[in-house]
Image (cartoon, rainbow, N blue to C red):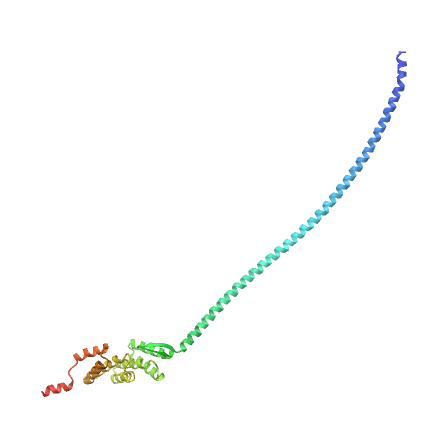
Length: 276
């Protein structure tokens, strides 16, 4: 025990020194820890402040972008509204154009109809080139109407109507190009009415005024027929012989030859036969 105690005594200063050193080191470490905590706090605060600034900046940019997006949306809405308005205006314009086109087409059709009607009326009023019985001439529309209507009545066996129409034509248009043909058909109408003397007069007008007319041979043959109806056989025979002499190559002349073969002998020949 005595030996141990002096050893302890000798080591005690060392232990005290070591304890003091340990205490010193512990204090320095604690001080260093406190220093490091402050720096860390400042760094954290700085980071938080930076993050806050960054966040505020981002929020500001986001707000600006949102404002721009809202503005773009409004612009798009305005553009869509303008496009719809343009479409509506275009549709109205197309509809107006279609109506205008229809109106113009209708006006053109009416104008064409009016022009056609005017042309037709003018055409009806203007003299027309007509060919009748081999003769070509200019005829007033009214002349042509009267002549055509008269012939239509004759074809329907309306001899009185036909004769009256032809007579009206000759009185209203005494120099008409239909004159010779009108005399011929008037003679036929009178023959149909059994007005043989009047018929002969009409046919003779044709022969006197136009002996070279295409209807002249037929007119002479018709005169012979009228004399036969009147029982004037000598006059009928003379007319047929004259027909053969003046128009020998015509169908009327051949008909006259055939008729002469069947006609009774002239009265003079009968008297000579009785005297013999």
